[in-house]
Image (cartoon, rainbow, N blue to C red; front, side):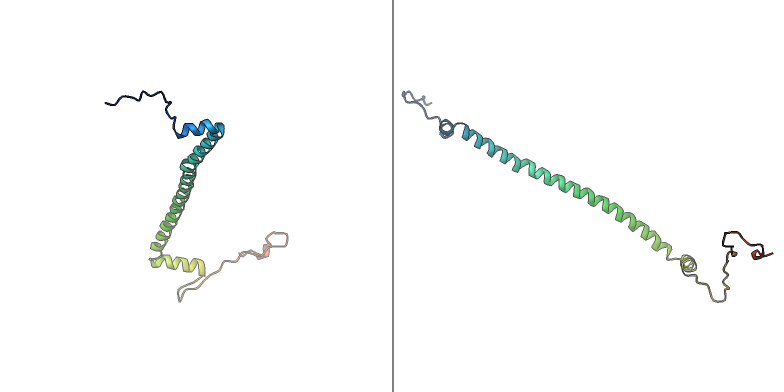
Length: 125
């Protein structure tokens, strides 16, 4: 084993201690500033990015749910349109179409007076 030096010369305190002794509070402020900057770079900025990405992910999930629901409804409509009965119903309802040989009838409301009353002569027996 090695014995500690016994010379009377003072031991060196190291480079950091010499800087602190020479510059005092200024060096401490610079060190605190560097630590704060390192903290911001290592923890705060990545956390903000993580939160922003999480928000975008949630927005994407909501949009996916909406599109999936629309896709489901459109698939049901596509299946209904595979039947000729649904096509006929839509043709009659939306386009007033009839089959050849059918006679279309239109129900017309009775004419009204300018004041809104129905005249007795306009009512059919």
